[in-house]
Image (cartoon, rainbow, N blue to C red; front, top):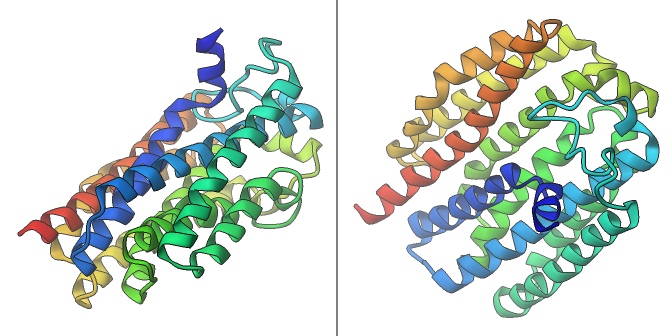
Length: 296
């Protein structure tokens, strides 16, 4: 039973939150020469709880809308499959999402008190992205921005604030790659779900633009990612060590090529696999770059 609950949280994606926490903390160390390990661990724990809430609430709403019954589950999309298989009841999954979000709330409140009230607007926007994404945001054009913001940029900025007690333009520039990467993670993972999402009235980019144009958009965002990283280094707003992120470029190329072969299931899944690797490894390497620069 414990394994079922664990699979419902989709642990393979929770690593993203850990890496985001690492990245935001390393940025604060590099830019402001500050490191509170206890704060990093506590804020990271709250972020993981929030991510679990996102995953379980998404599963619940997908099941209730009937999307799950039409979705072709892949290793990287289509939800956990737990509700579809009848291994848990919908209300159990719903309450898991609610409880984990409520458990994350005291962590956020603590940092608002300890580090400053300016963290509160960020937490409110992040919470809205969690709660409204599946039932509301997905029904409007270009919903992928919400994932890029709520599970990309905002966590990095939040971790930075948890360390420093303020935001900075340097932190904003450093968080843009996380927005692009998580946006692209969701975008490519939506390709196999076009039929099911169309049935539910959703307006993801592969639906509103068509898969080929969505693949071109995915490509443009990927190019933007590496140009942004290189531009930040060239402008002196990021350390040269962050160019380690370019080690993922070959995998990005393979993901881009696979996105245009969306009608071939095996090649699309391979592209999704490469894209997940790019999302996780690029942000990890960025964090390592900031860390090396901070200690040298």
